[in-house]
Length: 414
Image (cartoon, rainbow, N blue to C red):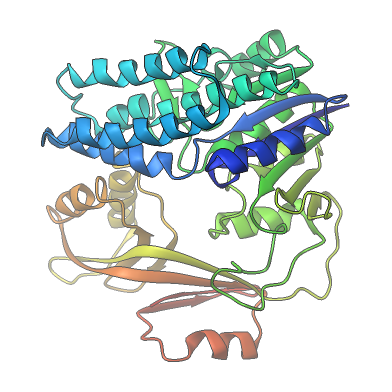
């Protein structure tokens, strides 16, 4: 039986957490495992600051990188003796970033992002592989770039499924493999990333290619819930849920699972478990085909840091098909995904994530041919399987800028 495990940054945020995960994984020593790790703690955020400083050439990139170094040095000193090889391996990874600093930044921010931020996953997997070997869980470290092949859409790379499936079957034939989430590689050997929080997707790619029996995503929550328990005190756990419903919730922004994760698993009917690494013996949530959850309870999803952009013709004439085609062409050019859209006679409104590297450039391009108004600092609220009571409660004391309803879902920008 082959299982794919995925652990996020929260599970390996410090020495104590890493020891806990080591104890958890040791319980599965007799099983064939492929284990995917994200960057540790908030390292992705820290490396994003490094990328920003490097791209702006403001002289702060070395200081920002020093913070990342200090974080990892604290961890390896707490896990290993000074003479162990891991110290050199971690230092060599930081040298790779320092070599990048010696070059003029690539004109594409996304390219710079992928070359630097991806190092976070290499740091975490080198540490975790070495630590697991040290405590007796023998494993083989695999570079994800050797097996996951993509196009060159940096920060949101598309998978070459044929090449990837072939290479995964060629290289991941060990009892226990450790590899990186979130990362791929182009045919020119440039590192790419699969989108923020893309490690879940990596686990699904591996499971699909290897015909795994099960995927387990280990989280700091009990499983998949009808709301974020950090924002909704009465959030309820789903004991099981269908692939289709999980896809819907992920599409609308549920943070527990990356939106692209479910489809590969559904194609081969590979069950997905979402479990707590804090209470590993609890059942968590099982996602698989054929679950018929009736009655549905309302599910609440909140996406923060949203921008509402309203686009109209300069002459206030009708918004017609060629306008919409032009707008979507610009969205594609800037790799901006749409979370919600609404068309009226004279305007077209979209709600998007406020990516400071994409949205200002998108607005400048839109303003060349359209009148553009936008509001920042908004939230997008989604209720799946809403009821009058759930809707009334959500709308309380909110200034609504845009609202959209279907049979099963309501979305509100406020």
